[in-house]
Image 1 (cartoon, rainbow, N blue to C red):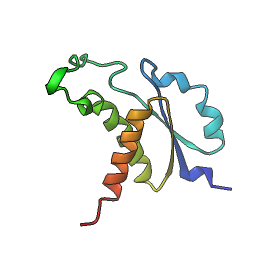
Image 2 (cartoon, rainbow, N blue to C red):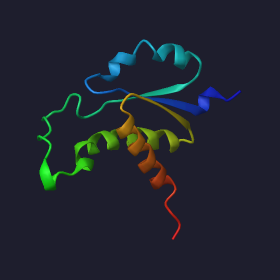
Image 3 (tube, rainbow, N blue to C red):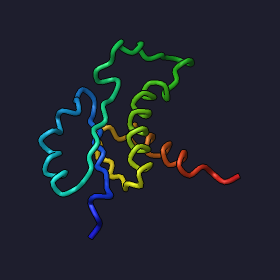
Length: 112
């Protein structure tokens, strides 16, 4: 059996849900010695509000969720910097997938 103390469970919620939604879930997991992290997505409670998305040729699909990707990636990198295994639990799948991939690229850059 894996040592739960070396595992961080990172929770990423979908749109319009704040991290507090998981506060009842965390204590039982922490009692099993898991570390937990809640990712707060910038678009859920922006201050100031983000500009409206661009449309047409100028639109950059990456910029729409770049804040989310950075928030999730930061949480992943924080956990793995302390040699934690990471389990990513998310509803925001496309953004979480990009964050996971970019964190992997940062940790393991391609060989030249």
